[in-house]
Image 1 (cartoon, one colour):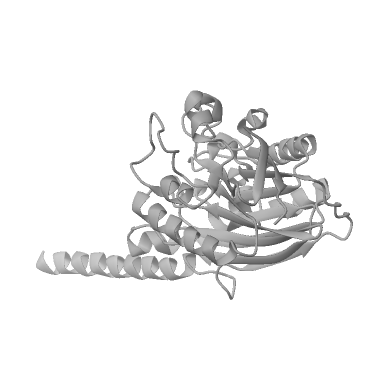
Image 2: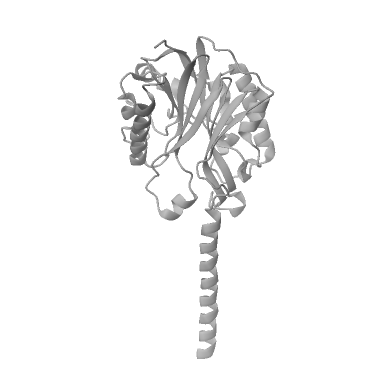
Length: 342
């Protein structure tokens, strides 16, 4: 009896050792990147498209497209390729109708298992004839084990990030790594980086800097630190360029009736001298529901923004693009601006 118990104990111990080795190997393999450089920044030129001559007004859009998964984003549900193909066509149709000069995307996939390995930026640039585009990679993993269950619904291989498509030449594309959230090391090992994508565009004889950002989702303190990093970045560029700060900030405006979390992220950005939101505080507070950008089925908060400095940029018009419907779980935000003479 004792020998039998010892034998069972050895078998259990051996199985535990094998399981531990598997977990360790999976951790290092799954969290590894296939790229030699983290946060790779790349510029593209579409030789089949023509650049646009500079106009007085510039139409800029920011859109977290949620890798075209609609309201299924982050859910453990079966998504067939038809969903992504349909939403890709819907997005292309929307962009044709809106004709933005510059599109700033967040949560856009470049080569990911979850979206059937389609280069979503490449498809947008090709179908919409954007001659210039750029990308930065904030999520590059061999295997992301999320959603946790069932395993068959997990994201698997991920190559995703932020991108800009433009009718005007993109002179520079760089990325700034932002503060990570306060999570366990094993969580951060598989989690996406938070980046500010920095592009310099040639608008005729003038230049414009755009910071395309996707801030932390779950950690308010990390977002406040990220706001400080954006302010430092702004101070580096503001003497030489008019600047737009756009993207998914994952936090609500000052004075929101139902704030997402208690924090000063937006307050920090608006404390920059001359900085404004294209949807002003007074306009937003007069009709909050009209300016909610998340989610697209039952909108309840505004977390997407376009900020500009009124000393160098004049805002003409802006709105939340409700006709996008559920292409993503976010609505896009579009604005028309004029670069002021300096």
